[in-house]
Image 1 (cartoon, rainbow, N blue to C red):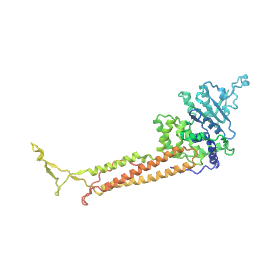
Image 2 (image 1 turned 90 degrees about the vertical axis):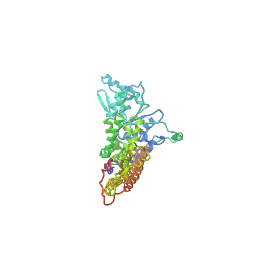
Image 3 (image 1 turned 120 degrees about the vertical axis):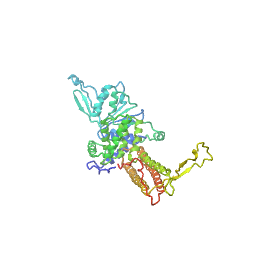
Image 4 (image 1 turned 30 degrees about the vertical axis):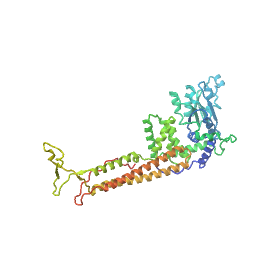
Length: 477
């Protein structure tokens, strides 16, 4: 993995500390909602939107109300939509004075076009007219008001829904939310904590000194522009894109670009100058559309991140098995037997007394094949050199895996946004790969000893070197 660049100099040094304090404040009292809070805040820092999918009563609106207090002087807008909702509920009433002058304009003060943080509950229950108007507002931060377009100060919108309908308008609107997060009821393990909350200790808004302002967001955006996307990360993006395409999960080019920028924002907020491979653990919520496919993608990333394909256990297993099969074949190989004069040995059928043969076939001379094949030093040396090269590369890769695990541990210490459950699974995957390769190393060393123990030709006979054992080469990449 390419080393991180030094921290970006023009990013305020205190920003990460303030984010740590903000996250702790926003999470306080919300049981099992830590990762949802962090994703929503990260989306807001990137100027993106979050869709929360889950049943009522799972703290979706509470999360949005807290989030707006993380931004200094931010205006908040909240609305529950139904199939009977009208545009006036979101965008403001028509201006009577403008109508008298033949202009179709709205009073937007206090409504969605005037908001910095917005929470729209049951967002997909709105009619297509409202959803189409929201498309432009969420993406371009502009609202068509009369004959002109009004610039909107929206930082981030949080949508909530029980389910996502399948129709063309809903699909386009669904794509406007970069992060799609499933929110489920508190687990059995967290239920006691949920009931044990002290109602007398009311939640308090973030300290004014921690709240973020426009200058903070501008500095973070500038810092993110300086964050690099290393070649290894770009390659994983391409591999992930191909993987999702094979699984028939469509991800638009716009979403890939936004996802890459989100990772740059995550890196910049932690003072890093390059996106890490481990930042890719944020991608399930950016690319997969629902909880089952997000879980499947998380599993795929945990297996792939930090593991070079050339050293993947299945490939190394095939190589080791090829050597073992070759050793077995050479142990079982026989040569024609010769007598002291160099003639082939023949034998008459010595089972003639036991096997009747009217034509005398039992007395025919037969070739004997009882001499075990012997091998010269050149042949055995070729085999052991191949194995020594493989063992050396496996040892080097074992050290690389150990370094990956240390890198992941260090990343977890500083990460503000990581799902630590995924991080733990990624670490276990690296450890599992190391264990499998260690077992394969033992097998290939045992095969080497087997080649060393093959029957040898007498010193004066020499011998030809058979073709090298066929196996998949281990790439240095």
